[in-house]
Length: 297
Image (cartoon, rainbow, N blue to C red; front, side, top):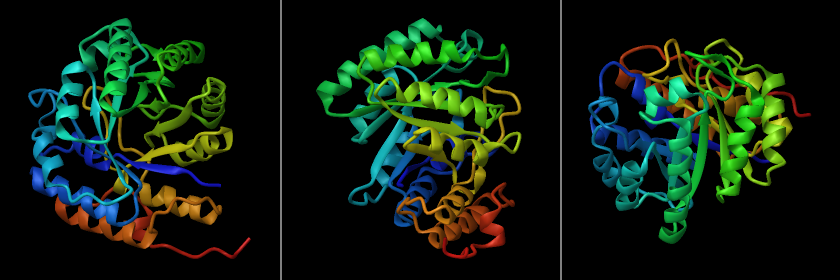
């Protein structure tokens, strides 16, 4: 079995840090991650820097990256203005995101859910002409910090609309880390039936992230988002703490015989470097404990 790891540390990981990092440092983080074998990286976010100052200078970050052959370099967009910037930057892939609930989507994207869906449809059409691959992330797929529990039927209906628009990959995001494996299996299984590639974006807020990742894999997900060192969170979602740590996820997958193409020892070194850059211990555990070779199965 093989799965694609999408590294979101340079974007989702850093967007919640109290002090913004300079574009050249963020580009170096991207380079260190890709040299560790990460096949896809969400390098930047094309959002209003007044709202998310940690993501200012996205174009400078992209310009400073040393591209590795075979790596997919992506950026997050929330609207067509963001897509315009991404298309001009030369990145390979647009990660368009919106939330499943009205309150959260208005706070995060300043738009209704229907407006965001319509924008997604336009972006998919434009990207097809531009030769840019588009994935769509449905945020708050498992729960909303403002509206509470989210009906999975609602999320799957949004996914159907995206599939009908021609989206090649749909990602279900547990933005505030409330999901459990039962819910993950339900959404991923339903998404797979749409005929799209399915991924999950998981936060470890309530310590269910790795269990949810493995449940997603068993249900047919082919893409797992993760963040180096377990850093991250959403500035517009209260108490949305870090993502699952990339090195913790790779350790689990290696032990289970799932291929990722990522060098775990090199990834641990990146996490150690980032600890020094940020000046604090990171939430991830494997980079502190070290790797360990299991008995062959």
